[in-house]
View (spheres, rainbow, N blue to C red):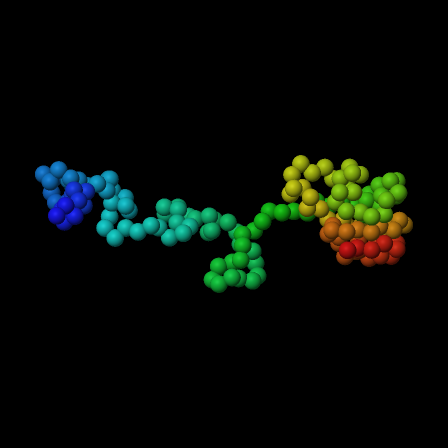
Length: 158
């Protein structure tokens, strides 16, 4: 007999909102707060990237030219700029230290670059004049003319 008795928790009636000012539940705002999108009927979560009517970041930032992914540009423009290094400077310092293998770690040791952050390691070696010391450069961007000068001096670029 006891198993047929209803549970007192499940029998509590749900509050009926929006049934007038005297209902004691909600009144005219019906527990939705004042004004705004969430107070209106048919309100759903806004779409991804919606910033409340403000021009969104995806429209404020400039875009890359070229290949698109779907209907939008692939990515935003990144403000990464290469720090130029003169080929003659690199050759002089390498010759003074008697080291032909050059990478970013070697440039830091020579004192040619002093990175505070990882973004400071965006360097590029540019040609200013011909060199007479063979350099083996690995993992550093090199301009076309600098590459030719390195190969002409007997070095290589990887």
